[in-house]
Image (cartoon, rainbow, N blue to C red; front, top):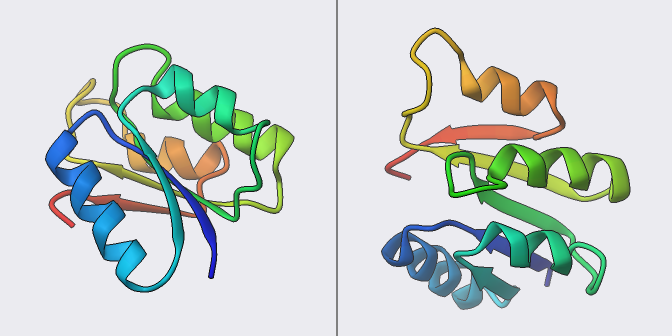
Length: 107
């Protein structure tokens, strides 16, 4: 059983991921608010983070950077449907900032 933090501003996807992981007996904390997620990084044990890249400020990239800095043992998966600036590969950027994997939505 892992302690997993899931962060996504899409409530349907957030609930889907939470239910799926809980069915595999993981302890899941889910939030649509990236500010709340940043607070939780230091308040609870976290084995894995699944975060959307594009959310209202501060967004997933900041979560990835903070996790990489403060919780280097924690695995991070970045997810996104795309968006952002077309000339920037945000999946590569996410992995360069510390994400262990970057996945395109829909999952």
